Image 1: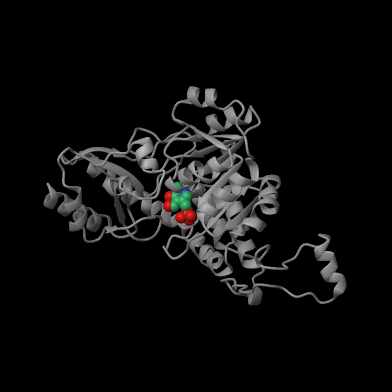
Image 2 (image 1 turned 180 degrees about the vertical axis):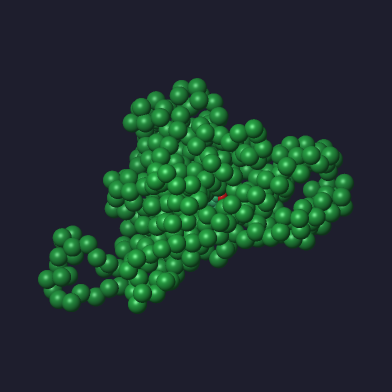
Length: 388
Ligand SMILES: Cc1ncc(COP(=O)(O)O)c(C=O)c1O
């Protein structure tokens, strides 16, 4: 989005208008079909030979899904994008398009727990090794990279919200011909555009801010036409994690309000994070916007952060006293949510990244939704008082 406009204006313009919708409808119709027919033999054989590109079967190409992919590519400043049935499907298909048995992947610590599980189970069985580094330590990243096939980033990371100098790390990997991947779900393209920072592939759990209404599970990857083409031809058709036309349609709707929602999440979450940081019951708050300036490449902050209560605090009583904040996984929707660290540490599914990387049992992850900030703060204050 190098158009001289404020990033919010640019993003709003990209998602507000579609040209050429059927019937001049302002909202595009859903092309809810599994297959597409051909008018004659010649047309069918031309499509099969690859001489003509048009939808044949929705697992391969669907106009509603394509519309979402094109919108997202524009928002990320990428040449192309490809939608998936979930963020995990986007992550697994991307990694499996590039890594082969015997390869090594370098990943930053505190990646999303199911990505960590994928790396520690399926990739391990395929003899793909994953080395974890602290992405805040550029020297450690530089030392870990030689010989790696992929560099997998998340900034801010899950749970502890570590931020990295994405451009600097991407440059280190690029200098060695290593493909770089980032999970950009937290910042969304409104606050961070990793392609402009030199990252090759940008992944989203579209279940989060892109959808924004907690009614979709989906994923997407954006990048160069060449790399997205590779994912589209190598992993996507056969792993089969396609995005459904209806979910793509809901995502198009979600994108319309993405810039304005991100601004609202940012304002409210920052206000709450600042008050928590001053509360006597709270030891520390991990929110990338609390320092004097934002990390390089990040132009704003979203609604997800975590904090740690002081020793002796009763997290269970706090959680059960909340009225507006609900106990629930995921984030990025209109509603405010909490996840206690104790619960994550007790998770049955293995390997457990919270144990491996070490998160505090006194920590709590908050997602600040779109409800009124004062009402949310009163809810937190009352629950803290009840548990102190
Ligand atoms: C940072 C991050 N990346 C990826 C995912 C996985 O996305 P999905 O649940 O859409 O598969 C999540 C889900 O919580 C996430 O938090």
